[in-house]
Length: 491
Image (cartoon, rainbow, N blue to C red; front, side, top):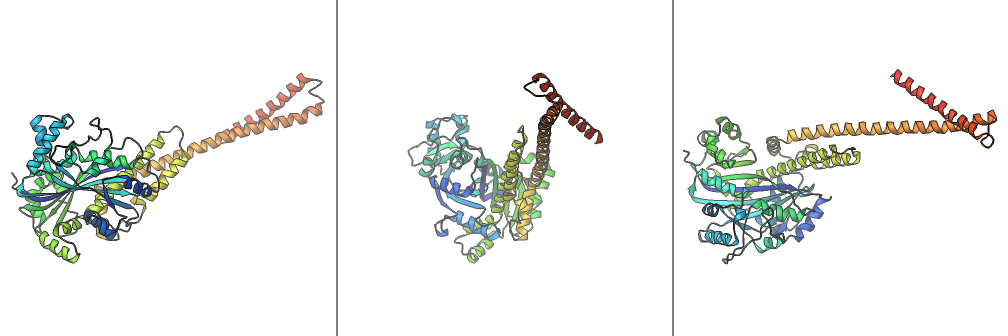
């Protein structure tokens, strides 16, 4: 059994969704909606000295390492919430979160308060100008006793399952007004100890508060989740030689980063494939990509580096310095996650266009125009720094953006070709109709010339006049049919 123990770690849970029917320019719409959202503390538009630390550092790092600045990304800091594990209550009652009564929720909250089990979570909203949105939940776990892998995995998984959430007045005011069923967000109850708790997940907050506030419909989309696990203090601690350390602890570290409770059963080739490709360019940090999550592992040089960074960058304390250091990687992971959401949305829009009985060339051109404007693959490199660009490329490849982009371009080429063929066919049909119409008019003109020459008038001999007129039209149609036949034979 691995003797690895974790004494301090952080987690970032991400919930990503697309804003349905997002108007353009999206940021104007978003700013108006955020003003009406009671749990918002500050946005990127506010002066930096009015911004909470996490928001200020995120914007600062983003502008330092990318070309876009605030033109593509808008962030908002939301009021802190507290979270406590619901697992002890569910095991004791042998119940599901949806089955808990108000009294049982109160009892679970009182137990969490008595045991000091509440942990503070810092939410951050990240918006892309094309209508992609991401809710982030930043949390730090201090575990001075040294937690083993299975306990750490359960802590990391708290962000993907229902827990006890202690909500501030701003969050409670933003909740939907009718807490009826589990598919919505249940309203919190007051146990009488100053908390207001709800048995729900962080993703429920993302969907029923933030997404509902931004989206135009009554049924906000369910976000998709990813996460980042940061191991800042471990025992034993790695040295500069990460490969030697991974030779002894790779399977356990992968289990923590991937939130895999059965990590000991995984094949060795899988561990080697995911844990022996360090994407970090810093000597004190190793970065590994693991499915829908990623793992940041610091070595024993971290305290000295944080102290130097805090003094060099005028950052107040080592915790803030650690956040500043991590953001140089995590904001790039955020960008790739938003790009994947955008690309998936454009694929869905292309698929919906292909299902139409008649291709709409105007809508197709609009989709292609928006994609060229929004997708990174059609733009300059995100960062002027080569190491950051290489990191973005590696994360993009890991998330399958290259494959998604290839599918998107192949589908758009096929749909454009089909739309062109369809409209060419419609034009040919219209041309044929016009030819026949011209034939009818020519036949009428021909009869108006022939009949006076023959001395036949409509008043004196109406029957003969009608027969000769129809015969003239028939002669013209026969000539047109013969010409069309000769044209086909010539082909």
